[in-house]
Length: 466
Image 1 (cartoon, helix red, strand yellow):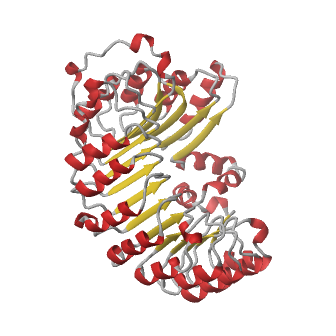
Image 2 (tube, helix red, strand yellow; image 1 turned 90 degrees about the horizontal axis):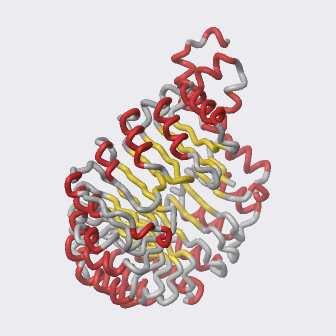
Image 3 (tube, one colour; image 1 turned 135 degrees about the vertical axis):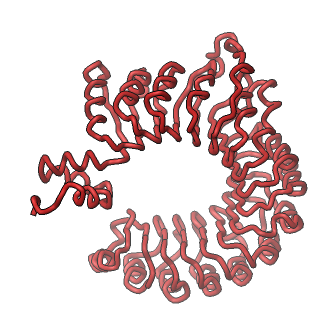
C-alpha cells in the first residue's frame, strides 16, 4: 500500500490530518516521517535546558527538515537568556517563515535586523523587548502586518530613563494593521515612531499599560485612530478614560470595543454620548462602574442602533430594567448576548424570559457562571430563541437534565454547546448527543459521557472537548 501512494498524495493527506495524529504518522516509516516534516507548515516547540551550542545546532538541524514552515512558536525556560541565539538559528533555517512567536526572553535589535533580512516574508511577530526601548529595527520589516510587543523588565530598571532616540530621521510609514502592546509606562520613549507612522492600523490591543509612552510620544497617538476598527483595553485602568476620549473625538470607523477591568463611570458615559462610531460589538468585562444609565445611553445614541454583539461580565450594578430597555431597542439586530457572572440573571426572576421575547434573532448566547440559574428561567428563554447556533452554560450548577431537553426541543440549529462544570448529568448529555440534529461541538467533562454518547458523537462527527 505504501508504494502505491506518491509523495504528493501523501503530503496532501498529511495536510488534512489534525495535529494529534502526526505522532502516529511519523512512526509508520522513515519515508512517512520525512514527508510529514516536509509538509508541515506550523510548529509549536518547547526547548528544555541545557542551552549549549549543541542544543542550538540541533534546533537548526530540526528546523531545516521543515522546508515549508511558515508559522513558528518557541518557548524556553525563562531563566535562560538564549533568545538571540535561537532567533539567529531560526533566521538561518526558516526562509519562508511568515509568523514568529517568542515571548520567553527579550530580543536584541541586532537579532531582529538579521531575521528581517533572512526571513523576508515575515508578516507577523510576537516578541518580548527590554527597556530602554529601541524600535528602529521596525523599518527593516517592510511586509509586517501584525506586531505584538511585550515589555519584560520593570520601569525601575530603566537606566536613567534610557537614551532618547533621535527618531525623526527614521520616520517611515509602516504597513502594520494589527498592533498589540503590553506593559507600556510613561518613561518609555520613542513610541511616537509607532503612533506617527502606523496609519493603517485596524486593530489595537493594549494590555497592562499605564501610559501611551512619554509626553512626546502621546501627542502622536491620535494619528492611528483614523481607520481603527477594533480596540481592546485590558487592565489599563489609568489610561482607559483618556483613550476613550480621543477615540470619541477622532475615530469614526470603530466597529468593536472591548474593555476589561478599567474605565470610570464618567469616561464610559462620555464615550457613549459623544462617539460617532457605528459600533457593532461591545464587550465590557469587570466594568465596576457600569450601571443602567450607560445601557439607556446606548439606546439613545443612534450610532449604536446597529449593535449585533453585547457581552457583559461581572456587571454588579446593572439591573433588569436597563437590560430590558436595551433589548427592546437593539433586539431587532442583536445576534450575540453574553451575561457572564452577572448576578442580575439570578436576582431577577423572569428577566431571561423577557429578554428572549425581544431577542428572537440571537445566534450566540453565553450565560456562563450564573451558578444559581434554574431550569425554568433558561427553558422559557430558549423557547423564544430558535435561531441559536451557540450556547455556553459553563459553571451553571443550578441546571439539570431538563435544560438539555429544552435545548433539543427549542433549538434545532444548535451547533456548539458548552456545559462544562454544569449541573446537567450523564443522561442529559446523552440526550443532547443523540437528539441534536446539527450539533458539531460539545464541551463537557469526560466522566459525563456515556459509551452510547461517545459512539453516537463519533458517528455524527461531533467533536467532544473535555
